[in-house]
Image (tube, rainbow, N blue to C red; front, side, top):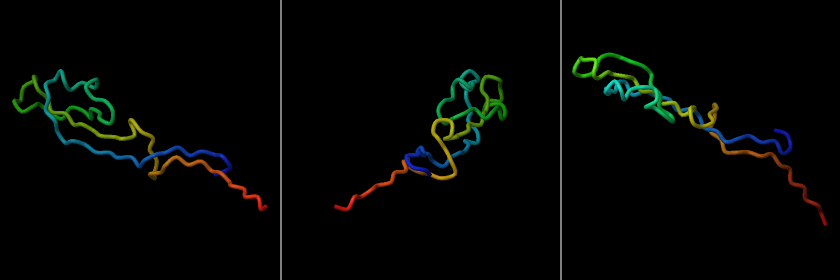
Length: 86
């Protein structure tokens, strides 16, 4: 890093999935998911086997809402302190 250069804070990405969630078809649209959650798609019919419910996979991805990198770090500003001898 050069003098007064900045490195923003970041965290390592966290990802995962909920293997199956059954909802009413109207509640499983992409607009129903926000933040770190996303709709990973239709898996199959719901518990009753009808078209009224459906089973979806829900994904979790922290990079959708925070800065991520290969390391977790605080904000960093490079400075050099000069001490004058009296």
